[in-house]
Length: 549
Ligand code: GLN
Image (cartoon, rainbow, N blue to C red):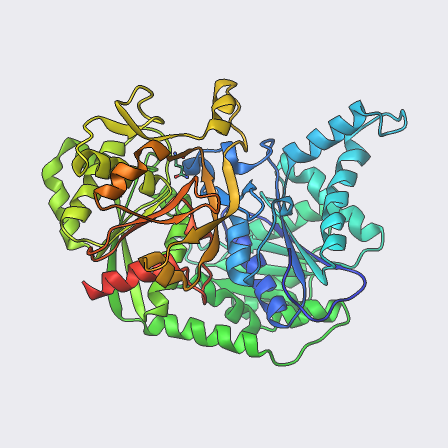
């Protein structure tokens, strides 16, 4: 899918973004920001993320290792950068926009087995880069893209990125219109106190060795890049001085398109393609939105109770990035600013007296999760929120555990559980979907969940129906377990409201408790559909309830 741009051209143009010096320097945000400006000017943009790993998708990766698994509308489990693209460009992106080494090799090997290479020797060069190119142009054709924005993951110089750089080099060689943007980092070593360009120079040399000359250098650093450093980069990296773009650290990632625009970055890119643009009302709107972020004053204290804490604090933001962004979007739309605290649910298992601290939050969120670790702590926290009228938002596992808690503590079903944790639970209130049983038995875990956008029908007169303002909605899903239909009647009799179901009424999608400050949960992941200027209704309702507290 791509943006609803108006200026469809016959041939796509390609902007290829590479990164040098170090990983995690914000290449994804730079790529998303270029996309934001292009979309704002009415262009159809198709962003593509290339990940140089053997995994077919991110679904089988640990969030603490790779960050959040992003779910696409068509059920892909992809790199989280697609989330940034969706948020910055306000478009839905399908799973084939995330290309991995594993996908490319798998296709080439399958084609070879199917005799699709006419008896030729199938080799890494040219067949692997050819397959990469084919995937990119398939998207461009299908979406009639004005621009395809390709971000090559990893760092230039890494052995595993070479074949993707080769594909990019060949694209230009074959006459496609390509502009290369290389994002580098300029460190300021503490003992020297001076911004250094040498690592960036070397990374450009690595790129040159792969046959690619960057058209632009985006220089990330803690502070803006001065003229002296720009001149140096220009001279040693063979790019015009005004093609060196400064990208200092920002207080909000959403400022990035604005900062790049101040340097006419995208205009300069378009100039290379022989294009230009005028004023964009959409961009003006974005600028106002960014300005307003700084004006938000009321603080909302949110406790997110999770478990992906095992490799230190640095993993947190990445494991739950879409939840965090959705909280921010909803807060900003109420002119409030979020203060998020991370709570390791295991602490409530060791020390139940600590649950009292939850009263100091304006609301709590139990996000998605898997497995037994910390689950009893989460259930205890849900009980505390329910009994003490603290706004609670449950996402996927959050819904399932809220149902377990309700069954145990309100319906009196001692020993109620999800069969994900206790296969022999006395009351399996959450159970595996019949269609998932065979996958588990065959240890077949990759891409076998209920995945992607699924519709739900919201019941008249409920909180969620009011929040969404319509009867039928869709949100993205990623789970194997469901509310067991055998227990619905009992749960309902005891006051739990199933406020949204799948259209065939078999699957419970939303629950809520009337009379509570806010006690709502969904089997879906509404965080994936939240956009900066269009916050998700569930998050909106939750934050509004938090602000009332
Ligand atoms: N572990 C649960 C399931 O598989 C919930 C998954 C989630 O929270 N995404 O159904």
